[in-house]
Length: 380
Image 1 (tube, rainbow, N blue to C red):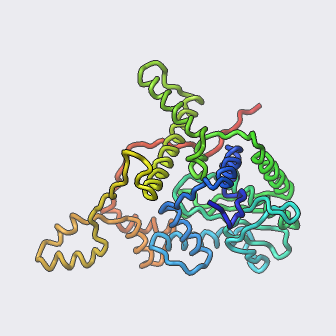
Image 2 (cartoon, rainbow, N blue to C red):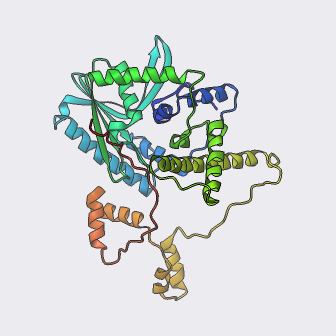
Image 3 (spheres, one colour):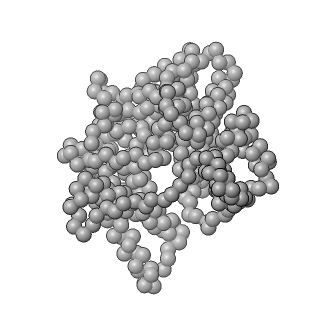
């Protein structure tokens, strides 16, 4: 697998992984050089996110109702952040670009890149606003601690050295915290650039260590990583000892670390399973004793209106039809928003008020979730 867009080089989108697993880039390079790095097809969430990004950037793409709602919310959040950033003086700023890739170079040789979603610059070229859209529902580090945004600031520092103040903002229309903002002055941007150069130097070290963790989730070399495989055996062995009563369930920092290992192992196993599915699809005889069976086929009705017409044509009770119909709250809310011209929090509040007498909350069992905020260091 080659990456022509990034010239097979690292990019800001992999900053989170590289910071925590410096050896991963070496493995990726080795596999790519030997023709063993296989492309992982994007999932449905990734495809939807790409479509939403394209729609926000103004491209002519076909969007479903949920994606359209995401794009409209992104535009609304962008307006709010830009208006606040420029203090209402919109004549003093301009759009630098959308979906633009910046490069770090040594002379003319490209070393690293990063693509920003949208950026504004003041007309005196002293201030920049970098916007990054996170359209999915997964965990996102806040702007202040976001590795990808820090590297984008570094790339701005390299390409536009006249800028002295940088504001970075995450726009997350499908998360509770929809906007996260951080600022960098010129010295902090210069430090970010030097840290980026140091990161590239460290990842080029042939002896750089590979450290499995939650960052493995999007690593293209995951299925070929021996350290990740060893983690599976270690975690399985520990689980057996705990089940046999030979080992007390650890709590505290050690317990938190083991819980993270379990989460990582689950991701590794799922990735390996999907990889084997792809191999069987390409060669049904490659895994003796295993084959791909057809996926489940479940009947569904997409045209509810037409289904109701057919039901009524049989002179059946409409109440019976409605009792078997499940309503998608998100789609109904989106349609309600289009009808009344509302979106965002105002739409949700209005919808909840209007349908309060029929809305109920279905509560599931508690789930494990990792704390998002970094620990506060004790006072010295």
